[in-house]
Amino acid sequence: MIKVNIIAVGKLKEKYLRDACEEYLKRLKAFAKVSIFEINEYRASDNPSKSEIDTVKEKEGKAIISKIPKGSYVFSMCIEGKQLSSEELSEKLNDVALNSSSELTFIIGGSFGLSDEVKALSDFRLSFGKITLPHQLMRVVLLEQIYRALSISNNSKYHK
Image 1 (spheres, rainbow, N blue to C red):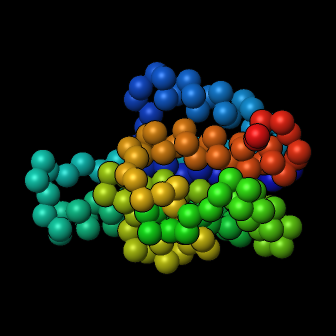
Image 2 (image 1 turned 180 degrees about the vertical axis):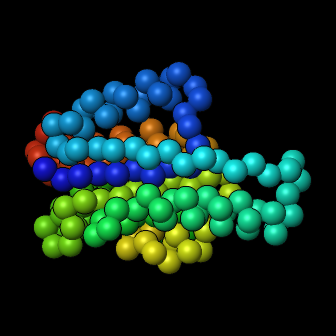
């Protein structure tokens, strides 16, 4: 059984998002051991300068890096990453689990994205499209897609 870690900046505030995550975490138990690590979100002023944004990303990045397990294959969620279909994501996860590491770590940045240092440490930059999603909603979408990918790998009827 593979191990999946999700390192996410910020806490889930809305009940409907927490409920959705709990549902996918429950479903994922059949395929993987999943852990979620929440990193404190650093705040910036209402109209932050580039320097202030960089400082926030750097602080969040250091906290993220401290949570990455050694030997884990790291996926950074970023808009400039590679877009994969659900089937391609399933193949990628299988390939990594068979050939690289049975521990996968997905990273979701904060409001300003991920630091360059986090991106540089990543084994794979993954994008779910050019749209911008709130990072709390991204966690739900990511969990669903991991569940879908593992369902595909296990010939479940979830993916049609």
